[in-house]
Image (tube, rainbow, N blue to C red; front, top):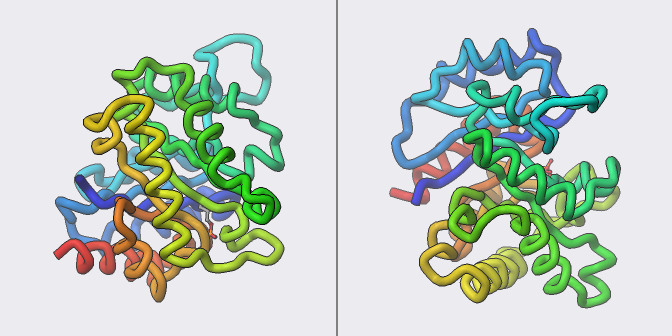
Length: 256
Ligand code: 13P
């Protein structure tokens, strides 16, 4: 399986800044065969960047998309409109769950819409600090995982990437803490167990599981060596070219 390094730019960079960053990133990285580098710029930058990107080197992801293909949905952009522009889409990020009130039902429809439009969804799941403190991590992970996959057929599950992002470890969180490799390992094992029990071993083995939450060049190596982790979803550090390229090089080194 490839190693995925995905940069989530969130609400940062103008279109011009995004284009300059992409230009520098393309110059800075060689063509890594086993490492899939992906960046998720703002929606408005996706179309111009899709003309600029070298898809042999890296791919683009949307940070969101709407679950209906067309119709009276003011302000939304559908996965059918994103088709051909992006290869991936982040779905169910905690900032959309908690700030924009997306629930598992809506997220499940988005996962299905992305797949229907040949876009690989990166389904984000993760518990809050309070849920962890109350011992609810297992239930939350199980509910968000199976809830998010509930609108697609069992034969489509291995078209999805899962990103485990504990909300308490995301650096924009008020008091973000670093997740310990042991804590990540435990949840990644649980994700694979739920996938195995529900969809079978073969499917579970083929679903990449990424980790995200305050990933930076100094912890990327440790996170990438957590058993069962197939890549990283990087927020803040992906906005700084030298840090992001450092993380990409770490992925290459860890694999070698
Ligand atoms: P940080 O890397 O800034 O903690 O963000 C993580 C994240 O939310 C990526 O989707």
